[in-house]
Image (cartoon, rainbow, N blue to C red):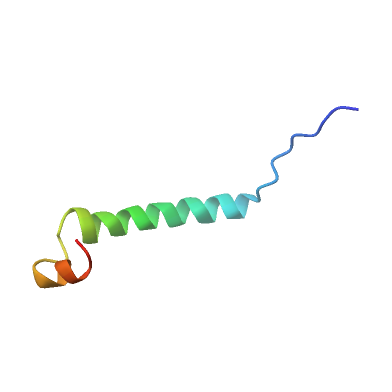
Length: 48
């Protein structure tokens, strides 16, 4: 009998996690890394 090493992770879950990772990275760039949206006191309140 041959072992079945089929992928057990649903494709929709992989796509959802990939989309969430991309969205989180874009939000990090907008709010955290560049300072394009938050500047001054609001940026300090958000933890940067």
